[in-house]
Length: 213
Image 1 (cartoon, rainbow, N blue to C red):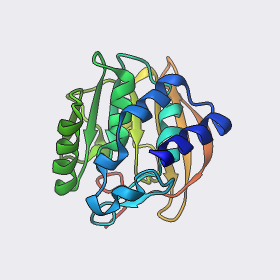
Image 2 (image 1 turned 90 degrees about the vertical axis):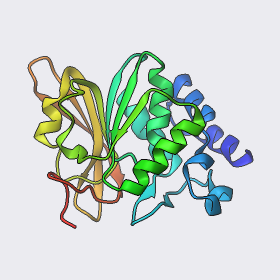
Image 3 (image 1 turned 60 degrees about the vertical axis):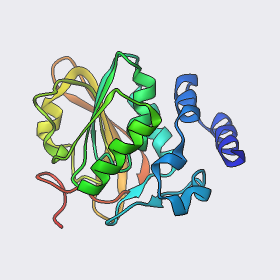
């Protein structure tokens, strides 16, 4: 727990994460979303390997993306790339029981892993689908927020069409080697206003609007 406290102190000094975001981090055990052999590294501020080339993002990156979403209680959030479920769990804590997270993952083993992790954590406001999230999910749309947790070439048009006016999308945009974290705000007329939040490196997104295998 010492490393967890160190992370919290580092963020308080260097970032503007709000109390709800910090409380969500405190309440979700990162060690429950990684492989058993890595549990002693749960609060290292670094990505950790999952399976088939996928990773769990470093805690600071998870919090930067969470903060960028400007989440509110009751929001409905769509996530592309469940991974082990850690990012979704943080979001679910913030949006609360009246909110909902709809998450998609193309790796079957991770779908099962994430579902099991949510069950063990007692988190009930997340639904995970084994689907290509780059196309969104029309049956669950529209969404207040969309988060992409894998590198994409651009924000897919189909995803943007499922974002509510006034909503936000956050994700890493670029090539396979390096991306810029981008936040898009959809105005009332449907136009997307972009903000650039710095350079990051994510594993590539696959699917209709992702990178080729």
